[in-house]
Image (cartoon, rainbow, N blue to C red; front, side, top):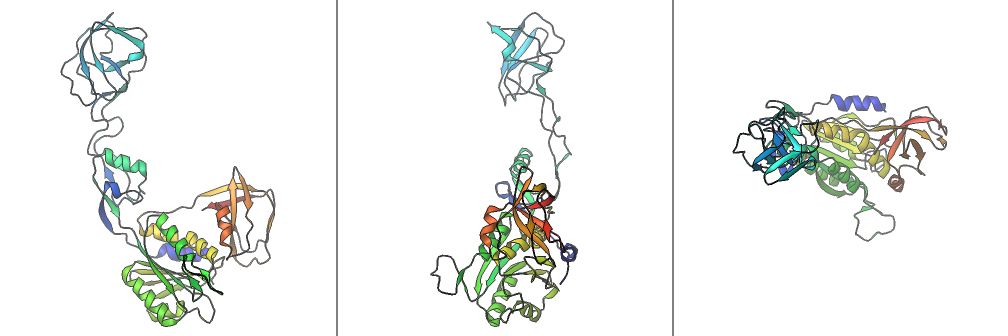
Length: 389
């Protein structure tokens, strides 16, 4: 059994090589940029009006101005503005030659083609060429996850295809003769398969391609065939169940038979002690415990950061600091524990939690509280750091 920090170090030191591809702009959301994006244009591309108003020359103190042109957004001005002249202009429209400021419509009067400024403005109401971005500027950095705001920036650069890293391909398998799929008739001694759907949702939420391999009954040949099939088609295989010390926990032995190099088989974490990680050439394997809270927590701690690296970006958990609203106690202190809690407005409240099979506790939690090995109690009023989920 190794400490959490050692498991994290092992995973961090495993070399991964994200692969590149191009996708249409419309499909780029939640992907990761594989290249720096340099601007090929100035933004704005020309001096433009920030207001509906009248464009004229600074320093022209004429008592009245002749309106010689109306310029809509998208129009190219036809006239150069002289002393005592102005152009009626709309927001976003190009400034005509001879002008460098706009007086907004609310502070002027116009009658019979003559504009009078009623109230002087200090602001120029002009967006200048290249003031946001200049040609050659880096607008987005390689490794940036693409959110709606990045999609907007890419579109503003005129990109219809975007260089991104390929999504990691993940195969998911559940083991256990007692497991049945949701929608089937539950017989005595059976439980519904929640782990596969939890894992698939966690993976898809971070933009990962998922293949579900179904349920493998507790026999060596069936599990071996299922693992081999997933390895053939995916970069990462995640199995829940079959990794502990029971008579039917065949997974570690099967992996060794397949040539998988195992880096660890037990981690000093609660829940999730029987966690397995291994490699086979350029493929990776995670074996997770069968209890559903263990599966969820181990994915958050170890699998998610690894998949983000494969996707070409880093992952930093979001930690919040708060005050405990009540005491927390535990009897066994040999492993670092992650406890479901609810944190809000600087307060942290432990959720009623019966152990690693109590998946229902997670629906009331939005964070995990880390309790270090050797610590038996966290008292009410103590400051704690919690990890958002």
